[in-house]
Length: 197
Image (cartoon, rainbow, N blue to C red; front, side, top):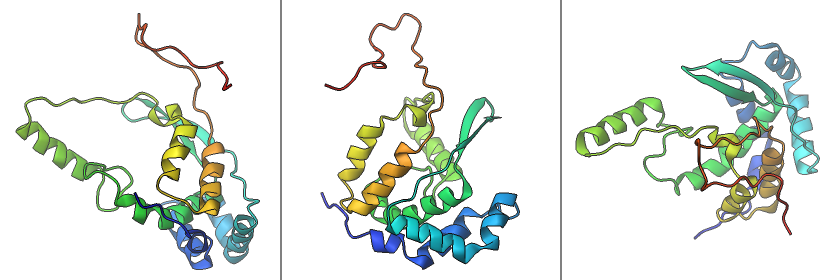
């Protein structure tokens, strides 16, 4: 399996950071934090570029709020400057990673999305005898960060890029640490409180 390296110069390139700022502001251009960042855009991007080069960049505090869509969901929003970094990273790492995804992965992919997923679901519903409809409760907060980092390392080998990915993952906020089981479930055992030896 091919591992991708030498991605860092593309990630911290000023033009990539500028493009990332344009992407991050879509639909949010007139919010106070975006306007403040854009008022000194070149200085902000040069500061971000310097922090990335020197590996002193640290993510800010997430803003957490609830929405009802149609059920309650907890949303965590990264500060605007962090979203610029996220876009700069994704602009470079997504194209090689995209090739490794299965065809029926629809979230956060250009040319995919909800409508295409629904169309494929309808096709499967008409051509398959059984269809499982499910929702994984608190999927993203329940991801094992060390496992996720290991999976990323099977695809990427650029040390600075891996440092940034680790920094972003480690800087994410917990969204409720409570574990939920089915009533009477004896198969799953909580690993909270256990430490590595």
